[in-house]
Length: 122
Image (cartoon, rainbow, N blue to C red; front, top):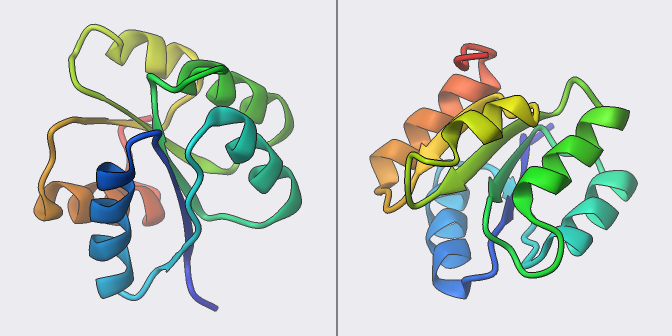
């Protein structure tokens, strides 16, 4: 079974980069552009990893992470943001890892490998 990854970002170019890198590595990718869509997908489908932007319209990535953690403690969640100031909040919300934007293909792949092998920071 392919590993399923859900990138969640309101910026189409970011989702496109994530999709390109992940599909090239053999992952099954489904995208969401807002927190509400992400919560619906997570409730109805199986994912191995969620790459979740912190700054989303409507419900934030931090809020999505908290809500998911109430129902699913096993799902790997990586919160993404352009700065370091939200890093502590990401971990407090239950994130397994933090990916700082901007990122390149090597950072994405390294983060995904680390999290899918269970070797993330938390």
